[in-house]
Length: 238
Ligand SMILES: Nc1ncnc2c1ncn2[C@@H]1O[C@H](COP(=O)(O)OP(=O)(O)O)[C@@H](O)[C@H]1O
Ligand SMILES: [Mg+2]
Image (cartoon, protein in one colour):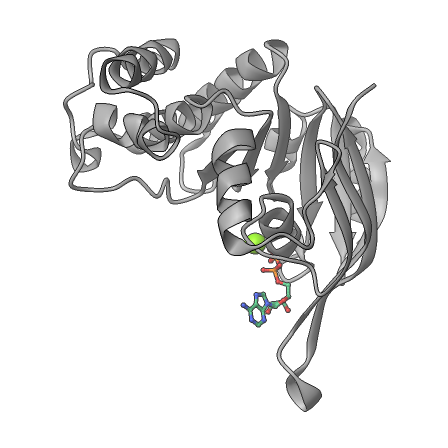
């Protein structure tokens, strides 16, 4: 089994001296290709910090991070940006679409950075927008779309480079429950196509869509392989 994510004794410290915050305390984590994981834990437990490191948006203060077999902990900003563009798709709670661009333009953007030629960009972007059910909304700007539609555009943008890994930080946090489940249906579809998914959520209902729950507390992983159906018991015990 190929390993996509391997964190070895990863720590993250923010600030200095008296103001030091140990956001991650020597965490170890292994995620294999094709897994679908949910990260849970109280606010401030280090979930977003871990996601930022896994997504190569930030670097650990100490420890090693192997992404797809490559130690990325020591890479430069430029090298990390290149890896993000090639290997990782991101979905955020607030969608993070560019407001002045249409749905189609938002989705083509990662292909511009990847140096894909104009015509192929359009074809590929249209294809993923079709896959998320938005082929009738190509020319709409984000403010002309519902929250669920904006999140689907963001998912199309995340997928257009055919990444190895989809990272989602509270992807349903700004959506109502019906729309949330539409987004989860889309994740299930992507997962069945073989992509590795790691998402942060605080909703047990959403975590149950995954196969494995990773539970954070005070900057540590306290459950590494929690079956999603046992989330309720952990919440109850807190
Ligand atoms: N950029 C930052 N500067 C200083 N402290 C931070 C920063 N980001 C996060 N923290 C702190 O690190 C800890 C973990 O935060 P975070 O990873 O955002 O937790 P979660 O996503 O689980 O709510 C918290 O105590 C938070 O206040
Ligand atoms: Mg967070």
